[in-house]
Amino acid sequence: MAAFTRREFVKAAGACAALGTLGTFGTASHAKSKGRVIVVGGGYGGTIAAKYLKMADPDIDVLMIEKNSQYVSCPLSNEVLGGERDIASLTFDYKKLSRGRGIKVMQDEVVGIDPQQHSVKGASGNVYKYDKLVVSPGIDFHYEKIEGYSAEVAEKIPHAWKAGPQTLLLRSQLEAMKDGGVCYIVAPPNPFRCPPGPYERAAQIAMYFKHHKPRARIIILDAKDSHSKQELFQQAWQVIPTMSCLWIGKVNLHNLKEV
Ligand SMILES: Cc1cc2nc3c(=O)[nH]c(=O)nc-3n(C[C@H](O)[C@H](O)[C@H](O)COP(=O)(O)OP(=O)(O)OC[C@H]3O[C@@H](n4cnc5c(N)ncnc54)[C@H](O)[C@@H]3O)c2cc1C
Image (cartoon, rainbow, N blue to C red; front, side):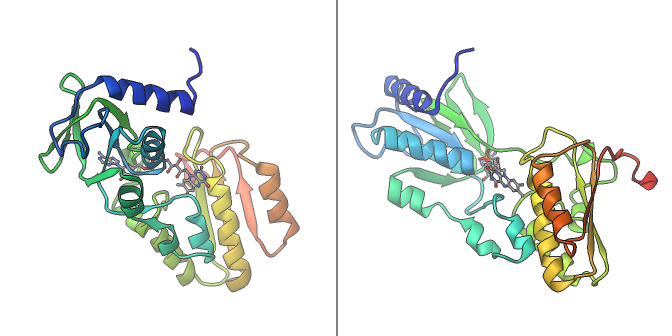
């Protein structure tokens, strides 16, 4: 299949939108609109798609539908665990996108897409018509895939892979941990979001321990036999002896009793 660059995508979306008809919900703000693109999801993917569509052609009516009023960035959230930043510095609303860039932002959860009718349905009951649709809802958790884990258990054993309350919960557990305690990190098999994430997290927690709980240790139980940027991370863990971090690979994560 021929490669489709970001520039080509934006151009094509603009051209297609120009051929379409206007939606009925929240009709276009100005007469010369070339049609409406709806973007579902206001994460990194959705906001960047919306921004570049509008920059490519201000006459495209861009409507972004996001279920939350604020977005908490996963990138850099490990620094909250290390104590280098607070969660507020990673929390964003959508005002700049709507006021500054002329993108309409609607807070609603999309619960259905009807490609024949060119419409999406919100949990609010609203139906939004589009000419072109960008679907960027990210990924979600399948707790049932890990035996014994669930959303309830995650309130005690946080995964912190969705930035926000989970990040703060893990941070507070680290703060409450006694000096000399052990923090386990379980790293999943590939593929998973953000391959360096667990090791970057270990480094941040190790830094916190180094300054506040020098006798505490981290043990990473990894399903893989190697990991992203391994040499770099392990160099840091070995060179600085107080960063007590042990990585164990090829762990059968279904049988942790054996470890
Ligand atoms: C700890 C951690 C650290 C990371 N660090 C980095 C890094 O340093 N660099 C990097 O490039 N990546 C990093 N990543 C990966 C990065 O977070 C993801 O690749 C990125 O968030 C994906 O963006 P997205 O827009 O596809 O999805 P998301 O960021 O998940 O956004 C999806 C949005 O869609 C909304 N949504 C979902 N369903 C609906 C619906 N039905 N209706 C309306 N809205 C909906 C959600 O509320 C959300 O706002 C990290 C991830 C983690 C977990």
